Length: 417
Image (cartoon, rainbow, N blue to C red):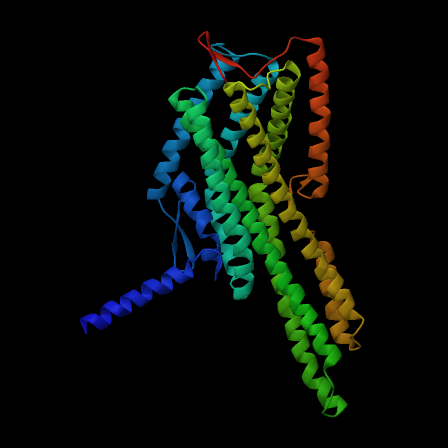
């Protein structure tokens, strides 16, 4: 009996391992597991999952509260030393502006993340409930993207952190909080992107059901007398349409909730991405023009760091825009499928129901946005164009002023970055 119970426990462990296996998600929890783990490590996941329910944990609120207080005090001190006391001096206005943007926007995202923890928990609970109807193969397809980007992105940032800490000369507090802000912003952006991908899969599920309904209407032949056939078929079609309408309404409400909760974070992330790409590209071109792109190890390390940072921000904003753009297109495809289905339906009652569904789709603008900024390809094009414009303006400024490297001096001591 003891051996049997031991084997039974071992089987349970195997099942649990299969449930959480990477790239083979079976539900919302296993899909979001890496993201939740990394958020928990950073102290921005003050919840516990009891079965299929998110619950607030007062104990888990202690760590983020303490970290946020220390972070705010440190950031205020750094900004005071940069802008008022001038004990931290940068060579050139561009570097001062870049550091101000990073500290202010990073700390703003940290504060917003803490304040909206409760509303974010309700959002995750809603998405979990909605996505419970998705088939297993949809979760597996999503997990290949979501698990890969969450894990490799986190590892990429950890490597960047180690590079940052051990090659650039900063005080210990700076080595802790700057990488922490980078990781926090990254995880919140990835959480948003994951939610967008799940909602996109939910829209695709509705579209697939409508296409299957259309195939059923086209291929179905009335073997029974016509009157009896339509009396049996019409209530079934109406019931399916009503279910799909309700699902679409709930998902659309969730999209609006997602936009409301993440709008300030997305605005800050977009501005931070724009600023970092602009200034880092400027610093790299300045090094190239001034002839500092030489074989000296310090210059090479700094230039590699600039390139890695630009690649990171470019890939991150590209992934977010791609998810939002494809999610919006998937929601729009439902309207096209409804209109196609109208062409094959002759029953007046079903036509009326489809027209009501079409009006509902038109009135619910399922675009992933941050206030007035829609996260789509237009925004990405605007960012690229504006970055190029501002770099050219800064270079024009460079030709009329002394060269400004990205150097930093603290208490009169020159530091490499």
